Image (cartoon, rainbow, N blue to C red):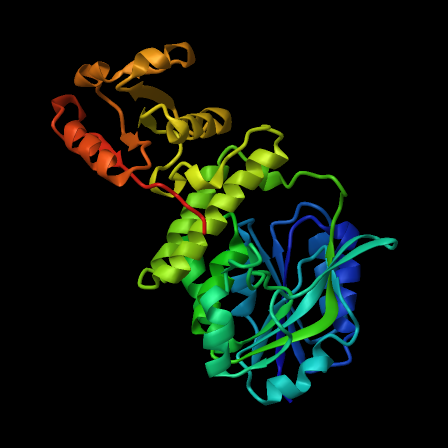
Length: 389
């Protein structure tokens, strides 16, 4: 019988922690090693962990200073012995027979086993989140044909492919440790921690089993609560760190990079929606966020449809430090703050100039013109019209 390693990272969740731990201890599948990682909790979580460790010798407790989710999970994953690794967040819980259901799949050494989860608001409000692929077994050929080409984004349905959540998965040890080791080495990934591990993991997966069982309870604390990460002042910076990391993992796979770009822009749009900015970010003319970090001085060249979309995106999302908007025919747009291109001949200390022109031929002519302006020699020129197919 395969041994399962269960890692539970914990930070100030004493209200829910007992239910979480007991849901693991009550599993019918008994061959487990459990790591409780007290990640610098300031409530009674540390004491609760020690209490359970005295009752069950399968439990290893780690007390450490507060770090981040990836580091806490990695610390726990390297402190116990197992064949398959899984996770439970300390405010969630699992069904009593979760791991027993996959005994056969583990004995057959399937790389990755995944089941469905439930968004739990209360006893009367529970939402099942199904897989976006057909349930069943995928050997290497079927996985590479049916899952991998659209594992991040399914174009026809305009939805995510494989959910990146780690808590509804059993992962072979070598695959899990390698993916986590790479991610935790980056140190500053503090947004999308599951993505940073699961997408590289999916790249190395050869066999997959998708179960239609609903076994993981993901606690939703408020029905209409805006996730805190959308309110974070460093949202764009953190998102860009995650995106750049994923780009490095898939640097030789343009079809996957395209999917990553779509997810990136989708998150930017979602932030604007949940914060009620009430702007229409047309995805066909979405500002090239991934090429330009936040808090930079940016020039937008062009005041047509594309330029207006770019300007509104930057202005309403407060993404740029300073924005200078110019157009050859500026006199038509002076009322909205557009300046003459002549100002560029004496404009310095700008980091990027974005050519907001859809027509490639015209855009290249503009880039040639800009490249010969001495004041802009230190300014990086960007032209990249984003179209989401």
